[in-house]
Image (cartoon, rainbow, N blue to C red; front, side, top):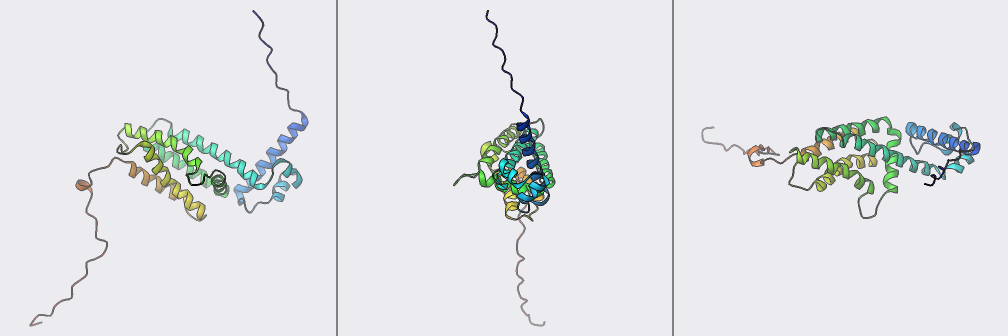
Length: 235
């Protein structure tokens, strides 16, 4: 029986390579901190270089532009979002409560990194856009929601008169509307918008009831007009 081939060893990095990685990591960390504190537009390459203790030319040796740095951060945000959906939507529990926990974590993340979250999402949507179709990042996010709704349907908590994939698209679309409102208007209260959209989605996902038996009659939207009094004899 022949002896197994010797295992291949990975050569350790040299001093120059380690230095390049250290400088690149430092530039990235400083840029991320500045973007979070004061926003992408207010941050300059010169400022990043100065706080990272490198020359501006060194910055461009590692990154083509400030926009390229932001592009790298979008991948980091997506991985965090993917991990968040897995953590909350795929664990054991009541489907509606799992969705609420996911939205709570999402709003906490936005609040903690508001200075950069909006810029990253804008870049994410710009770079990940598909003409005449939904953004691929939405399609990738829908899959855990489909599983969540299928679980809710099996438990009798969510409606079964529509396919789970369709309901997931509608629910994610409702919550995404809060994000798009925020991207259009930075003053929009996105945290409250996400919570309200999630609650509205859960109401929509609930099993339908017999509206004729349970729904109250709608209140009139206008008051009936008063008829003028007709004078009578003797008055």
